[in-house]
Length: 496
Image (cartoon, helix red, strand yellow):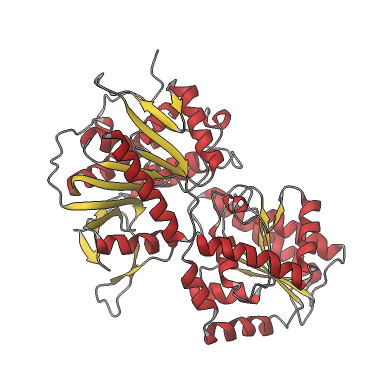
């Protein structure tokens, strides 16, 4: 069989470095595109400091870093910056360097203009450029080499997300002693869509370097295994793939399974009961003119989030006079995203144009139809928004999980409020008491929004109570422990 484009290991970016010394000191290593810290600018020209990034992943893994000899490998956030490893919050952070060209080709290019749209059901057309692929391989090699140097003999390595899908194979070649896990935070497409990728075999082989490949939904794991059968012709039994050794030795197994990610439920619940945040929520409603119903959308400004569908449905409800300005207000938080990419700039113009037309048509001197906020907010302000909102609208066209839906449920400590949730999110598999909706069906979306607005308090409480019970039992710590326990068991089964 003639190898597909990108499959050969004949150039420098793809050369396996089997001579990497296995004398590193870290027993547990997390690898992600970004380090789990953000730089805080110093005052008056003073050198800046670091603070922990918000988000569930670092929250889940920080305790393990403290308990074990752990390190985190990733990019520090500034192009062409070379930093020595440093310590922060009981974690050893090992920065990798990305040049401006790397960011353009590997990150904005292959990761976010090839893989992101392809993996999200081609909502936007993916682009396929060989220069992007070469950069993706080169950067994945750099990450893998950094891990191989840092890991102790027999260490456990957990690789995160679609930007680093080749790292498991590169690590397997360089350090066969390692236990390697990979988690894909975004959807994995069906073979009929994945087939478009010119380097599909190389990506699958990269992922199969892991002992355990984790996905958000059972369908994602099934899609991956179907692609492995179809494009690599490998044997799959009970979610395990028999991966042949490159040197003709005995094969090894790689397992694919769903591990739905979650949030730090206790943090959100505690914030939702803080007096200052409860008062802030009341202030938000007063600032809106105390409408009967506050609806809320919180998204990264991305074409996968269905923001335009949501705005269209709300605009038509105003036109139909099903809701009226003053009685109902929609708050739409759209945090900035990939603003250097043309497609995202155009999306921002489209969303802001839609908001402007709706507000221009329906606003009064006293009240506004849509309060549009193109900002990122700290978690305290987000919890206040969750408390202020009677109805949460999550209308993603495709989403690996959608943690905003879970954060809203966690914040509703009195079991009030209603969640309208796209059936195309991973969260829909778990939050089954939400009002599930197909966001492409604008009439159906309008009916579902009105059902949420008019829902009797007793029914709303019953639904919210059941959803809260689920996420309390399945928080982010349970997610990480479940994955790592399965990884350890999988590696143990290979050794017997």
